[in-house]
Image (cartoon, rainbow, N blue to C red):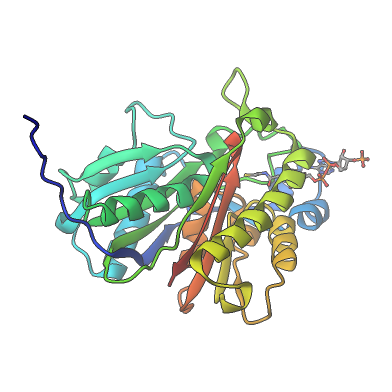
Length: 316
Ligand code: COA
């Protein structure tokens, strides 16, 4: 005779309660990175929209930056560390002595005992982890989740590589996700194309190598496509949006996607890349934290190495 297991009840929905960011102290202008790659401030601005980025110092490690961003998000949500039931860290640059970052972040926050794990989906890591947090909460496996994107891209970028040195920056962004009576995180549209993984990969020394023009072409086609599908799944159109927050890879990719989606002037388009560069999995939560007054539906789209992509509409 079989035994019937008891299931834990979940919640009808989940929502983002707050966002926080940590930007490393050192602001690095284009002239500094251009000097090593025979480039110029003018070229970098024209091809990427980037004016400056932050580089982390030795004391600004992944755990420190992630915990600082998460503390701000927790304070913004009015949630104490003991009420956190899971800590998720999305990162592609963890090189530390511990095998994962999340347990150390939980410990630093005072949330020891919470479930803690890292998630790897490169620059699509944040929307992947957000879909995971939403599923954990709706399925009853977690209550309040702290979700952090944290990167030290300078640890994996060759400062003499003309194709990547000027694009990337360091930092962390975090959100608190909690149970809700209604749906505050729309259905995720996600996927990956491993056959194209060579376009953005680590070489044998662990340095990030990128086929820039190919990645650019892929990004400008996949971002509007998954964005439209995420809007459809959420039962919305582009005119319903209050904000568009794509992964901050290159301002030209953001602008091309906003144009392809036909976004009106009322939609706030995240441009964090201009002063932050591409901070990998941290870029979307950092950009969200930079839009404090925005209320209503925001379309998030992540894309990057893998090649992985994910999009969902969230209610801010
Ligand atoms: N400074 C100055 N000139 C440069 C340069 C640099 N850093 N890098 C390349 N060039 C030159 C090239 O030599 C080439 O010169 P040529 O026309 O005389 O042959 C010209 O600029 C164009 O090179 P290309 O590589 O085609 O540049 P691009 O217009 O594709 O811009 C990127 C380069 C990296 C900005 C762009 O490809 C890009 O943004 N790709 C997507 C990157 C991305 O988002 N990655 C992260 C995804 S998570």
